[in-house]
Length: 163
Image (cartoon, rainbow, N blue to C red; front, side, top):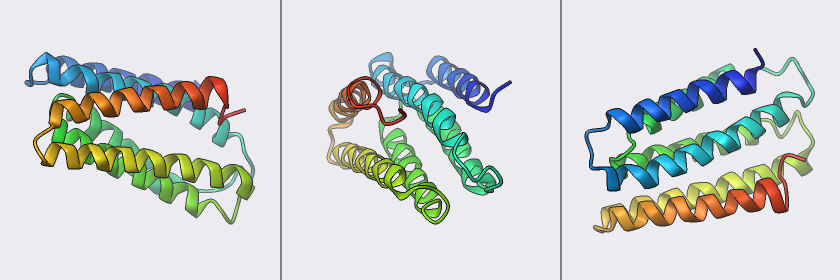
């Protein structure tokens, strides 16, 4: 099975399980589950695109392992808005680090845009974390899901990142 299909399937199942077994009320789960679903969709295209770029012998196992752990943590945090915002912030920080480390190996033009996009994702998640801290957890979670969803429409359909 191809890497992007396997990763997408595993993360999708993790998100579904996280959504269904969460002990938090459904209104808290829904925005997190929507964000997570869009993230998994984006991840499919990201793995498909970046996995095919040279050099094929680059070793990203450690950072990919960290990202996978953060995906599972994110799935387990669905419904717990504060933990979800923290895990999503860490996920985007790790993703930025992954692509910064690839700058010496892959075309900078592609990576600079990906790093900027992941940086924007990190800022969105950090703002969500701040909103949770200040008592607006549900509102922040919905705003996070809405902004992230719209950004992905732009990045996948209007001005594709992975073209």
